[in-house]
Amino acid sequence: MSPHSAYIHVPFCVHRCGYCNFTLVAGRGDLVEPYLQALARELEGLGKPRPVTTLYFGGGTPTFLSPNQLDRLCALVLDWHPLHKDYEWTVEANPEDLDAARVTCLVQHGVNRLSLGAQSFDKAKLQQLERRHTAADIRHAADLAHQAGLQVALDLMFAAPHETLAQWEADLAAAVALQPAHISTYGLTFERGTAFGSRLQRQQLHPVPEETERQMYLMAIDYLTQAGYQHYEISNFARPGKWSRHNQAYWAGAGYWAAGPGAARYVAGLRSTNHRSTSTYLRRIQAGASPVAEQERLTPAQRARETLIFGLRRIAGVERAEFQHQTGYTVDSLVAAELARFVDLGLLADDGHTIRLTRAGLLVSDSLWPELL
Ligand code: SF4
Image 1 (cartoon, rainbow, N blue to C red):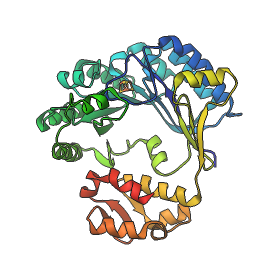
Image 2 (cartoon, protein in one colour):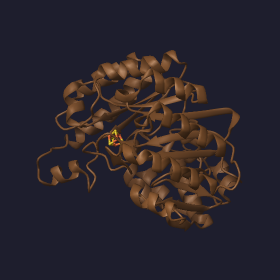
Image 3 (tube, protein in one colour):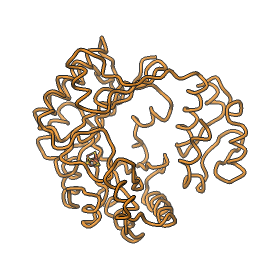
Image 4 (cartoon, rainbow, N blue to C red):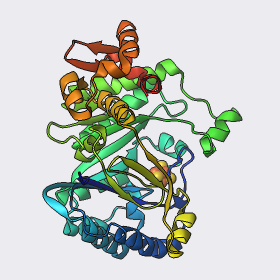
């Protein structure tokens, strides 16, 4: 079946934040025009328009583009991915570069959801994370978006070095005060190959103690659910009816189109990923070559295992009967021993009908997935 979702990667940022390992180029506004041309050629490869119900522009920072460039990007993508009637179209934005002209452009094309990389409202924490915006920028951007009728999703980050529980609670309170439809919370990670990863190795940066990080995560769950947000996925919270439809398509194991440097798509059982290097991506497309760097065809059992893992990321968990109907496998035929072990350890709950993460399981979920694959 043709996917109903599409992701477009926009690989530009003013600078690279110390913790970021996303596919992007920093301070390369000169590459935006070649990127738009390359994207047009890549999308031509779709052969015909592929209508979708969810569309997501991520980055990088899509709002790094000028209003005119953003206008052309939206028009180009809509040519190839026209939207079904009841759609969700999300664009990621950084608070410091969202202005009225960009918001107007997005709304005119039909964008209805803005995902703001807020991370924190605390000046020192933002500086430490090497973010360039202020709390005032976040409030201004959220106001602009709300006034234009856009749903607002905020990303927050916890466990920055030296951060205390009280500081994290203040960030949660400041986020809730803006009344976004959706809040995502992520613990800071120190990835290899990032500036923060190197500073950690040189002991110039010190992560918060693991126990503090756990308490921060649990605090987010308790604080946001008490504020009326539904905790519907490990890192995601939303007002009723405002769950991210695009991400739900991923978690349901559905296929998705994708274009842009580093973008990964999953179409007809084939997962393929474009070159992560923006310059390689541009060069290959300019030379008439495929931008794809890797591809992998999953076996039905592999697909079923992935579907199980994505399903378990959702707080509602996995219904055994629905899983079997969707994948053709029973859960027990794939992971009976692991499931029994995780239930014994109190990390998964299994009532015979639905399997879901427990509160203890939520804290260590990342360590469970490799054992289920
Ligand atoms: S703004 Fe976001 S995407 Fe850009 S470098 Fe910083 S963390 Fe990465």
